[in-house]
Structures are given as structure tokens and as C-alpha cells.
Length: 225
Image (cartoon, rainbow, N blue to C red; front, side, top):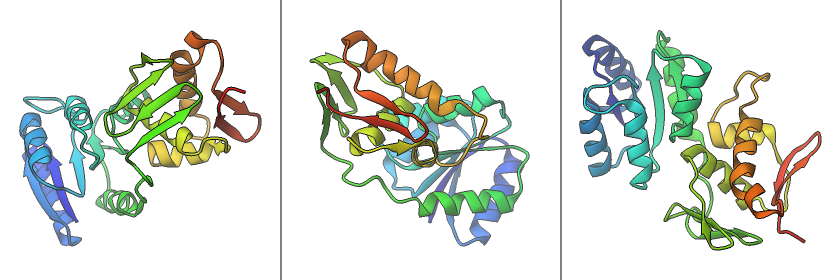
């Protein structure tokens, strides 16, 4: 695979570059967030390994910029910021995985391979609908009853998964795998928290609920009867 590594620590960058290239990957390295955005937009990479604390533009802003530009390249955060809120922030802006420093090269390679195996979401283009809710995947546009709704990157993906499975139950584990890419601590309430945020934006202001909890199973989005 062709990877872009955005890491400002020279020793860390050299270690990662050596490990990834020895595993057979082609790796470009930049040490500045702005350069990372420019290169990721100009070139076609299979994956981006991204630090958070960067000169020029921090990692969260890099990921946010790339997602806003429509780039769907997998992003793995690799950072010393390892708190739960830090990880949630990284995933919310469009990260697909989050690995905390210090790390073992074997785990980094395993996660790179796992992201590479993840199938792309089918039929990624087009408009998805449930009742009077509309999502244009390509334009990153969501509206209900003609009123535009602003969603964070992770909320957008979560809603997209629900809409692509309209009328079917999507389990919590399915959402963790498809939206966050790996399982959090089973005690984590990250799915429930994001479902609550979605409901606050697309259900409560409009009266009729589209997102439904299927007790003991998961969640489902369906047309209002």
C-alpha cells in the first residue's frame, strides 16, 4: 500500500517509516500539518498515519480539512494523546482508528492491515432518505423537512450507516465496527452518546422520531408511519 505519514518527531518518523517499508509498504513522510493536507489532496494514498500535535496545522484540523474536501482515505491517528475524550475527538473529525504512543510496531502493522481489509461502504454516492430526512453523501449535505442540519464527521457516518440499512436493525457491535473501526471498552457509551446527539439534531426539533431503539438488539431508522 501507499501510505502518508504525518509526524514531526524525526526519530519517531524514522522508526515508523522503517517498520512500514520493511512490511512492504511505500511511505511518504511530511512533518507539517499543512504539508500533509496538501499532499493528501494532490496524491492518491491508501492510508494516512497522522500525529495530532503538529506544526502548521494540528492533526484534528488536518483530518477535518481532508474530510471537508471529500477525501475518503483511511486515517489512523498515532499520538501521545490517549484519553477517552482525545480518542473520541479524533474519531469524530473523521479518523478511522486511533493508536496511542508508545506503541509496538507489530500492533501498528496489524491495525494498518485491518483498515486495509475493511470493505468500502457500498454505493457511496447518491441520496439516501427516510421520511422527510435527506442525505446527499457526495455533497455531505443533510436536511429534514427542507431544513439543513449540520453534523460532525462521525455523526454523518453514523447516520449514513443507519440510512443504508433503513428498516433493518443495526447492532451496537456493527456500529462500532463500521463507524469507529474497532471495539472500544464494552463499558464505553460512545454509541449511545452519538445516537443521542443524532436524535437531538434530526428527531427532537421535528417532532416525529426516525431513529428507534430496538431493545436488546440495536437501532433502526425508518420512515414515519
